[in-house]
Image 1 (cartoon, one colour):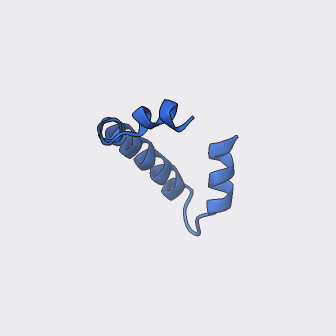
Image 2 (cartoon, rainbow, N blue to C red):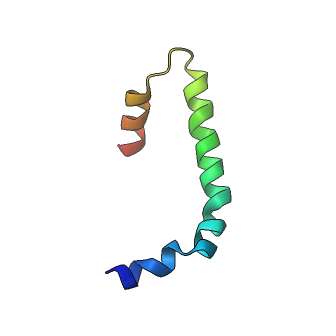
Image 3 (spheres, rainbow, N blue to C red):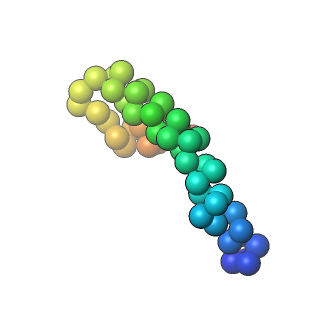
Length: 50
């Protein structure tokens, strides 16, 4: 199993994903900030997984 997955998690693959991960993170943090303070991290995480 590891041999099948390892190429997808190489340093090169992770560098290629970095812009998309940054974009997703910015979007999630912007949405969190838009809902005001205090932030409900549990609710936010639940929305990501549903």
